[in-house]
Length: 502
Ligand SMILES: Cc1ncc(COP(=O)(O)O)c(C=O)c1O
Image (tube, rainbow, N blue to C red; front, side, top):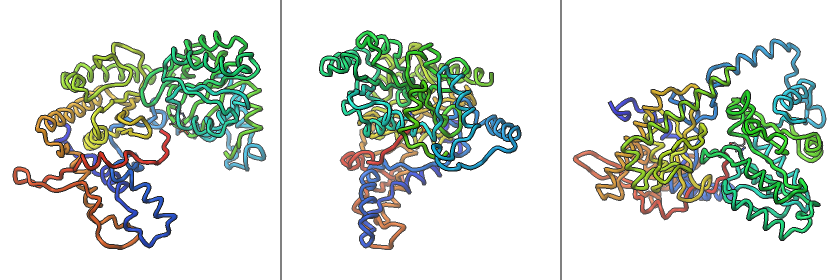
């Protein structure tokens, strides 16, 4: 039995998608322009089916959450939390105010000092989230006259901090490209005499493992180059370990520790929201940086592991072997339909360094979304990623593998991807540019229903308006079949203007 002949798990996901993509502004003629304009802007993304929805977790095969080690999934975290609570019966539950006023407890201070010791840094500062940590670092640490040099794929939360930084000079370098990094540093040296003379600093931003590509920063090479070009010690690194913290390094302490580079990286930040299955973020640094942060940021309220890590990597290898050795994958790669970032030209992975993040690049328009429909229907929960989270034409389905995933699930996953791919081959061979794959047809039928309601919203009853419909109904072999006018949707402004951090 092929995956799509099994139970359909994707109905809820498609309904949430269709609801999120319902055109709303035309039905709001009498509403305040405040709301109507916002809905009109969201409609731009909706008309291409690209508006995002919140999808509550359902009981399907998890190939996308960030609970990599299964600490949340297994209940281990809950158990530890309850034990810790029992050991501290007088534990103060409450914020007490901002951390700078009454919001810091001695328990928090102890946690910070234990984390600092574990991570090999002088100090640690725990904040709400990785987002807060990045914004705090980048809006605070670079001072007037300094320059920020950062990998072009740096996370949106770091870029948001940079936007309000005192360092007006900010230069990206090509992703993971050591040669281009050197070029950028040389150009800084030439054009900024105070930096060249070691009076002002270069603050360099990279991530350890990049979530959208699943590739790894050449950190050692970047540090060597920076020390060479700026021998006064005024080039300093900030490493975002969001995706490696808990997953690699001794006792899961991360990538910087794994490389033994703690003393060469001024600041490491990590989030607890991924492998640690919690909330919060951490900034590791020396006491000078901690003092600066406390004074300048807005501090607001607020051996199981090793086995799990080994299992994840075994599973990633198994998945990649199974996928890339599949004849359908090879054909899809040759035809430029599927690929994986940073793999060789032949689409094989040749044992290049891997992470638990395994994005599948869908190189044809809309295929990432269609594949997401297909996989959700088969009982997986993929993450389809589109512009503006990644560049135009770089849509992908991001899969994240976990300690609790099994080899059988990986086989089923690959089969399901391959089934979709065969379906797309057949559609391409038919020459019918309007034909959608089966799971997408189900989703677009809902989209059409919503659009046929005339873009009249839940908020207001109004006249019918079908002008946004890109779809029609055909009769094929006596069966009603929805087709979607892809030519029309391609003209529509691509995936929405909504700022997202993933
Ligand atoms: C690289 C990176 N940095 C920072 C963050 C922000 O972390 P948080 O979700 O804890 O705010 C994320 C979240 O996805 C991330 O991927």
